[in-house]
Amino acid sequence: MSQPAFETINSILGIWKIVIQVTMFLVLWAAAFRGKKGKIDGIAAVLFILANIGIGFLPCTDWVRYGVSALAIMGYGGIRYKKQIGKAVFVMLAFYNLHCLSFLIANSIYMKITGVMMKSLDAMQESYMQQVYQCLSVGMAVSVLFYMVLYVAMAVIFHSLIKGEAVMAWQDIILLSILNFVGSMIANVVNGLLIVRINTDAFVLFDEKPDLLWKIPMIAVCIFAGEAALIYFWQRYRILLAERQKHFVEEQQVKAMKKRLEEAENFYGSIRKVRHEMKNHMANIKGLAGAGEYGEIEDYIRRMDETMQELEYKYVTGNAVTDVIINDKCRRAEKAGIRFDADFRYGGEIPVFDMGIILNNLLDNAIEACEKLETGKGFIRLSLKRKKQFLILYIENSFDGAVPVSKGSPLPPTTKQSILPGIITEHGIGLENVRDIAERYFGGVNIKVKGDVFHVTVMLQQGGGGGR
Image (cartoon, rainbow, N blue to C red; front, top):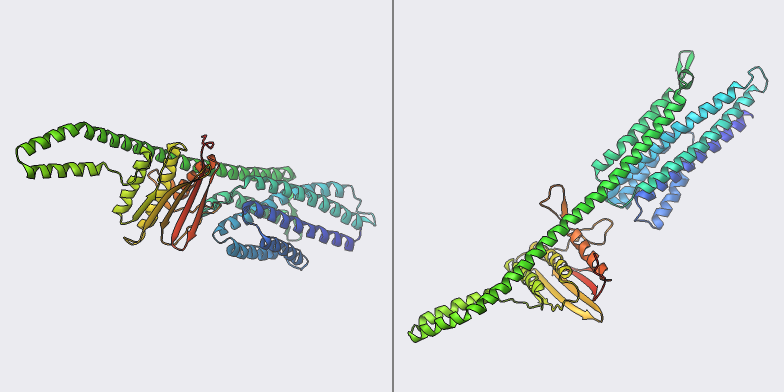
């Protein structure tokens, strides 16, 4: 094989490696940003591939191409994904680490193949250089093949591990990128030591230390396994944290419902007590009337009226638990200067426990939103309607107009610190619970914002599943 032919093959294999790298980077990028895809992403991907191939034809080092690509990715990520720029950094570090690990293994294979083939050559033959070029070409082709297979395998494993669309915190990026950095540094050190010129002589790493031909690939495999395990356990940690958080919120809601049930029981106990004492009250009034103590009678009746008003509910819903919840929220709202209006008649079409969780979550959110406004400007409207076999719950409230966005969820959260260390409870979790209940009854939750009014509609099918 002639030198020009060797150089042509070398150039073709180099471009092919670039195509592999760009494709694998896009695979990792798609894994990390699964939820947001469109024509813009497709156009950007095509331009990215063409730009890398174009730079590959220029007489410049790979570092120039990596640098230009990194700047383009950071710019695109900052514009397109804004708050997820950290995830873009992680994808780039993971990509470069996979490239380095694949290179370490493929280069060891290349050195082994060319070493074996070169030993069989006769340096005295006239065709010696042609045979050398042929050996190098075969070794390069095999190494590129292994590089491609290894890179694809690693990228596919990473693709299956990287799940979800959560915004990655910088501490998570640093944790997950430690082994990426280590693998990249080892690859660069080994690459720099492959052949070192010492005056007129040369130090060839694998000639001096032939055992490194298998040790270096093993190190690369271990680094990749460590990084994959780290990502897997990080994903599991996020899932467990979310479950723990949701369990805590549900536990708090169960406690709140038990408290409401106790309040309902105490309320009706008080009514029974008043009815029982009514005979004594009437006897006392008759006694005062017989004695001509009309002023005392007026004062006595006034105290009785105050006691009765304490036991009177502004809204009677037809169920003891929903009576307590709605009237309790009404008193809390009116105390904060919030107008509260309810049109709610509940006949037990679904278990009161589930209805109670829905009311508690939505009314708490509405009250908190109104409390951020000036006194007298907040309002809450609650209504329950029936349409064929469906119950439709409407809640609308005024708010400050700022709608926070939750990544990967259509439900808007407002965060507040919980009493449990390490957990942030969110209204988003409460709304998730409302949505879960609605879905159990073959319904759903619809949220709309019109100006400074927040509308939530919950649809529930009567006699639906309701199974936990």
